[in-house]
Image 1: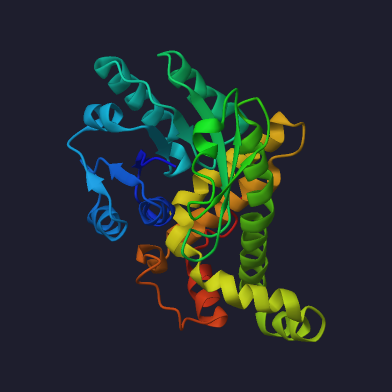
Image 2 (image 1 turned 60 degrees about the vertical axis):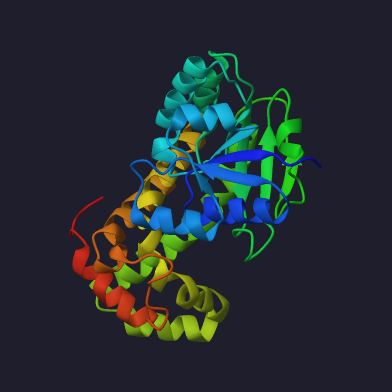
Length: 295
């Protein structure tokens, strides 16, 4: 495989790990850090990225562009990139890898297709490269540019000819994983507020020990990601409604993440979070940020 210049916006937890894996397999990851946070700059350095001056330079140099960022920013980035492509008359394949609904994926694709660039819809499932081997589900008229990166620290799985199909897989998957985490969090907050947290937890120790273990492993550490996961839950709710299924489950999940985003733990990052924090401590803090009667 020839060396490819792969633009990744932005080098966050997943993006920088993908870039690092690509670099380890002989490719060149680039990004544009203008306006990005100091944390993004640190992660880009850790991932071996080369920083370029602006989006015009990025699209001119890239063989392929991967959009990996919070879902609320997906459409804005597509529009910004489309303008840069037109200005530079450079139209590399654009891969949206964000946790967005099929309708949002199609809207992103329309922005890219309108300027004549190839569009690939992608949904990432699994932990970042280095921790695991995530799967990039891809769909669209021609997914071969992304398939060329298969095995570079992640797997690429073709999943249909239409934009939106890959995103639909991601949405339904995250509906289970993050949806379950928020259900766990919500019921524990309710029990604490109702004064039955300890007896409920004792019952879980008796009859739901596996689920209690999952609560202890995950619930104390969700706030660090809560802000960006609000939008993902809203996208899942929209996906369900598009399919004729109630979106209420994940409207509620978004509200749980809003509560967690108000806690002091939300100021942590995955690098700085207190891994010694226990479930009891976390729930005691979470309930202090409930707005009783909300929802």
